[in-house]
Each structure stands twice: as structure tokens, then as C-alpha cells.
Amino acid sequence: MTAPIHVAVTGAAGQIGYATLFRLASGEIFGSHRPVVLHLIEVPPVMSALDGIHMELDDCAFPTLAGVQKHDSDHLEDGFRDCNFVILVGSIPRKQGMERADLIRINGPIFTNTGKAIQAAAAKDVRVVVVGNPCNTNCLIAMSHAPDVPRNQWFAMTRLDQNRAAAQLAHKAGRPVAAVSNVAIWGNHSATQFPDFVNAKIDGKPVPEVITDHAWLKGDFISTVQQRGAAVIKARGASSAASAANAALDTVKSIVTPTPAGSCFSAAVWSDGSYGIEPGLVTGLPLTTDGHNWRVAAGFKIDEFSRTQIDKTVAELKQERDTVKDLLP
Ligand code: NDP
Image (cartoon, rainbow, N blue to C red):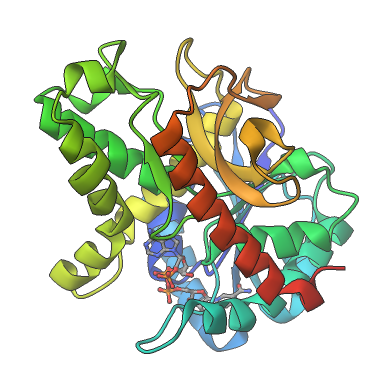
């Protein structure tokens, strides 16, 4: 009998959390022979909603669901105990009129406690995916409070940006999205991110050779990806949830699955100085993995345009880090 994989999700009763749990339980992510034990974590006032979700999980009768635990955020160590994956969705959403810096100050302390609890209780091999925004800096705070959990086990989510970019490129080229590969997102998961069309490929060919409208690539393509979250809110009256949950799950799948040759996946990780990005930030980078150990993808071409874009988004990450420097030990 294969040992179950324990997966914790914070903010489990929120929009994204709810859209994540059933796919985790279904066997889609870790395979139909790998039992999954879900650890649902929420703030105390929302615990009763978790009871309803637990009933729904039972009612799906997923053969792979080997257990459900419910924990409140006052007892995070219990929630993370022996977890192999932790998906950190729970955080305070940005309200109207709130500046990014306000949000960072509000959510920072949540991630301080989270980092400490992961270090104290999670399995040694735990991999952490931070979704709650501002996810790069929240990840930096959490990992800084868990110095015994190796840095290469921490990720912040830029996958939704990768998926959005791939979809835009596919539409423009009139090709299926499966024809698009090697899409990197550099920097911050924010409106400064750089979706890299220079190294992306369609049918294995560089995007700038396939899409010859370079003004679109440098203009509307980038701004559409950067502003996509706001466009969804405007149209739907609520922030993206199913696509964000899908991206969190794609991130987990990409971490545990060998990357196809000639491609990469996007996530924000601790920078080691690769591509001239200051070490010690959690920045979007192109990654590849053999399913166990990941590395920064080599050989990405950084032209003058890309350099300017990357420097701009990295400058924002430095500002965010400075805003929370009292929270970084
Ligand atoms: P959502 O589930 O919609 O969003 C949760 C977080 O994910 C937000 O920070 C949101 O950022 C972020 N996010 C990241 N990428 C995206 C994206 N592409 N689109 C939309 N959101 C994105 O929020 P809810 O309010 O529905 O749920 C949050 C839950 O977290 C609540 O149930 C709350 O009780 C819980 N919570 C749990 C905590 C814990 O377990 N420790 C702590 C605090 C809250 P953005 O604000 O930018 O939309």
C-alpha cells in the first residue's frame, strides 16, 4: 500500500481553496494510486464552513481520499503536521482603496507564523506553494521564519500568469494552447511582471518568428497578461478563483513531474543571482525539474527590452522586501 501524501491548504473555505480541494482529492494531481490526506485550515470563524466542505468531499466518494483533517489557524502546527505539500492560499484580500504596501503589512504577520509552524511540524520533504498575495513577499517572509526548511522547497505562484500568457499567444497565432511552450514569467506576481515572449515557443519555434506583430508582443500582450486579474474582476464581479486554483495545482504537478525537454515551468523561487537578479528575493524564474530536484532553466536569451522589463519588476520586489524588513529575521 502506497503511503498517503499529506496536503495542507490554508484558506480552504475561500474561493480558491474550495476550487482546489476536490481536484487534490480526486487523484488528478498525485495519481490514481496515491492516497491523499487533506488538511483543511481556516480562521476560527469559518470552521463551520469546513464541515460543509468535508461533507461534500465525503459525498464525492473519491477512492484516493484517505482522510480529511480540519484545523483552525490558531493551531497551525497541528494543521501542518507531517504535511508533504502546503498550499498557502489564506490571506486577507485587497479591499478597495488599499495600497499594495498596506496589504503587505496586513498579510506579512500571517506568513511569519505560518513559516514557523511549517518548520516546527511539516514533513522534512515539505514543498510549499504560496498563492495568497502579495505571494512573492509572503513567501519570502514565511521561508525566512523556517530556516531549517531548505530554500529550494519554497515556491510562490506565477503559474496563472504563465497560463494566461500561453493562452494569449495561442489565440494570436491561431494555434492550440498545447503548441505553446517555454513561457517564463519574470519577477513579481503583480502588474510589473514580465511575461517573456522572447524565449517562448509556438510549435517549437521562437514566438517572435511566429508572431511577427512585435508591437503587439511588446505592448498589448504584456499589458493584457499583467492586467488580466483586474479584467476578470471587472467582468465577473469577483476575482479569478477556478483559474487561480488550476494554476496552483499546475504548479504542484510541475514540481513533481519531469519537465518536457525544451520547455520550462514558471514559479517564483529564492533567487541565487541567476540572470543578474539580486540574490535573496523570491522572483519568478524559468525552472526545469526531473521531478525531484529543480533548477533554473539555462540559456534564456535576455535582450535589452527584456532586461529593462526584468529590472523594473525586480525593483518592485526589492521595495516590497524593504517594506517588510522588520518581519525578516
Ligand atoms: P480567495 O480564495 O479568492 O483568494 C485568496 C488569496 O489568493 C488572496 O490573497 C488572493 O489575492 C490570492 N490570489 C493569488 N492569485 C490570485 C488570482 N490570480 N486571482 C485571485 N486571487 C488570487 O479569497 P477568499 O477571501 O475567498 O478566501 C480567503 C480565505 O482565507 C478565507 O476563507 C479566509 O477565512 C481565509 N484565511 C485563512 C487564513 C489561514 O488559514 N491562516 C488567514 C487569513 C485568511 P488578491 O487579494 O490579490 O485577490
